Length: 312
Image (cartoon, rainbow, N blue to C red; front, top):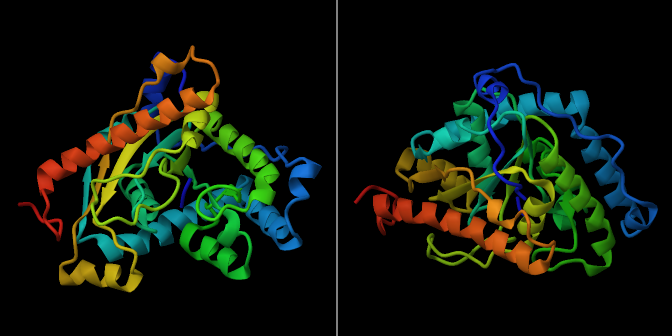
């Protein structure tokens, strides 16, 4: 799963009251937000079919149903496969966020399963109602029946919206469609109580051996933050692999500890008056990546260079 804030808002009494509520309904996706004809034209028939299907699954009652499935079944089996290894830090920063405004969880990206474990923590360790969206590269998830099946069984349709002209091996001719996906993603980040958007600023997986190294931050998240002004919470994840059977087996055979660190909400007050420019977007992205790296240093201080994630 891949891949501004305006001045820090004053916290009203209503915000404080809302933080203690469990009955706040999540925002609903604007069903009227559709791609323009020229944007849709660059997709083939199957991609258009996949888009219509997944979009419908992320609206209204369907979204509420799949979110329930995600909470009960998805988070349930991930918990069973990780409960001996999972260690969570900084959850109070998630609890401190306003329930009335969307949240971006900006995380480093080393495993296919990063956001699955993060979402499991949210569902099992927080009580407020939420709905998750994970923007993804459309090249696999929206181009084959297998991709749709994986989106269902692994993401409960939450791998949405798709981007085709970004990341590794971009499909340049579909760049026009990505304009729609970015508008939609901006709307999800701008409006919708309970919207949680998982985002990887690096844009692709870091395949290097050092868990405390990072790829350069891409400007996309900077533009998203500048345009939509969501709450942004950095997340550092370590200890996950990419071999699913081995990862699950490690829960009972002593695999590496899975560490998830949530950081304080990031303020972008210094960037509010800046012009909408690529340099501004890049600087915002670098701020986000630095906050993630800071969490990585906290993890390093606890675990050092232990290969199995045990405390030194």
